[in-house]
Length: 419
Ligand code: GAP
Image (cartoon, rainbow, N blue to C red; front, side):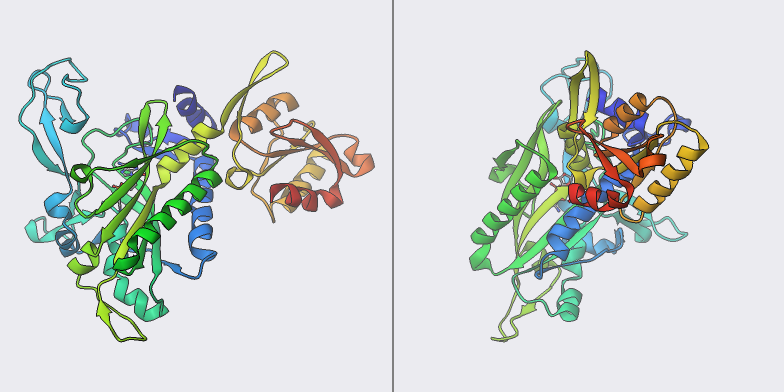
């Protein structure tokens, strides 16, 4: 973890939030490379689950919703964790995450647990009274239930179909931590898949398979599927399987799959009418949910490798090509204007197709290392021979093999490789 956190900071993936003012506990900013990586993950997910299917449509709802949504959803009454206070140092912890001893001072006595609601509150408008209290959404899911009628009426989708959303969620976590694993502000990618009750087992299995496909696509080789027992499931769930991952800080949740029954649509009075039989009923819901920031974290952990190259350690992020922040880096061998001119032209031309970096500082060896460390799949080097033979050297991040390619064929060569 230390290596990943330090690489993230050094290379511009993720910075501590509000750093120049001493930071804000557990808040993180995605830098120039981090935002590309995170966007690639969100866009790939959207392509896989929305654009390439006929049965799922997307929405992008407001982060702050009418408080009645959270009453109906059960979040005001139930979305809480048991909070205890250490009697010695007054540190506050989640009771279900303690092992008998205060992690700060070793104290063994705690206050009785109080249910602490995790929703983040604020006031809307100029008057700060009870009537103006609103909540930042703790999950993106509720908007898909609240907008159910609007989506059915405007898209004419028939069961089974799904609504997808990617966006921020907020939870006033008692014990955030482990870098971007648990924060108070994070992003989710969620699908609410609406089905007939009689088919829930079939669709639960189907979505578990879809989640497995996504994990493989993300480059994850090993994960655990954990059946969550009755007494540990969220208040809305009739069956939950957590996808867990072996993080350096232990085995913990990465994604989740829940059968929410008709709990939500019923509470929001949303009814479906079968257009053929005219039968009216409340659909049931299978909900696969993915944390964006946890996806970024496991993608970095899986991609990070250290190779031995001629007795030196080479740190390399072996991202799948689709995920890499930069696809290509263009590197003139020297800063001589005649090389820079050609290299800049090549880079600008490649930018029409790929996200590219241009770098002419330091030795070529150091620049290769830098690109390896940020996971750029291909480096294009422009040298003095380029001026004579109209060709460049293309170096592959993983094999470190170099090919000499004609400039006029460069785009189609890279396009083929980056598919
Ligand atoms: N709509 C269902 C739902 O919100 P959840 O298991 O509470 O279910 C879904 O959250 C996913 O959101 C988790 O599997 C995790 O990836 C991510 N997540 C939840 N809380 C988080 C936090 N505090 N920080 C970062 N990611 C979080």
